[in-house]
Amino acid sequence: MSFTDPNEPVPPGPRTDEFVLRPIVADDAELDYAAVMETREYLRLWEQSTWPEDDFTVEANRKDLVDLEQRHAAHRAFTYTVLDPDGTECLGCVYIFPTNATFLGKSTVTPVGDDEWAKVDAVIYFWVRLSRIEKGMDERLLAALREWFAEEWKLERTVYVTNEQFAQQVDLIDRTDLSLKFELLEPGKPGKYLVFG
Image 1 (tube, rainbow, N blue to C red):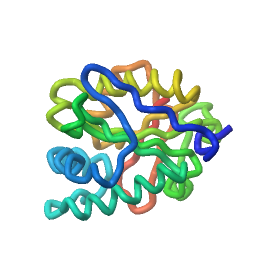
Image 2: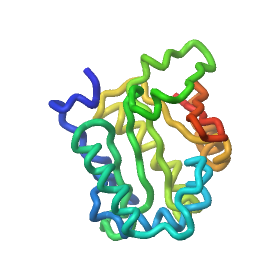
Image 3: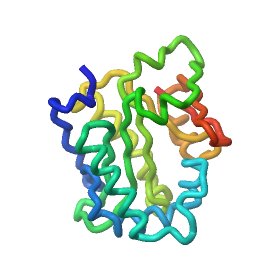
Image 4: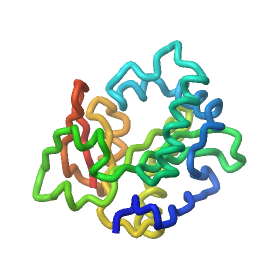
């Protein structure tokens, strides 16, 4: 059964002493914007684009979040904001896609070994606010995500995607027991994405 089945409940996000995940909503625009702009140099590498532009606004961000909230509600893909335990600061974001998501369907996916893309349960992207990366929170978030997907989502074959030019996140994943499974090229984007599982 697909995790995008609209009849299946979506698990609540994990909570630790350091952070909590919950579905993102349009009203998160200001908190999310602050984290996005603080981390924009990394996000441009991660996105392989000029987003977020220096003149990006809270209102433009709100429009993006409306789309994410609607996509989440329709079970097409899921986006979680990562907040501090008090819910007063955005610390990052997590995106969960099925392999048949439109942008992935347009991408070229090349196996590195014997793994099959069709057998992947979920494709996960995440980023952490710059000031929290400096404190190692991205490593703890990745560990929490892996446990969450296995125990709450009951997904056995999740993969984590980053861009080869986002060296900090590549190094983070390389320090785990995850290994490179696929290389992914999105149309119109210059850098290669690395898919670990």
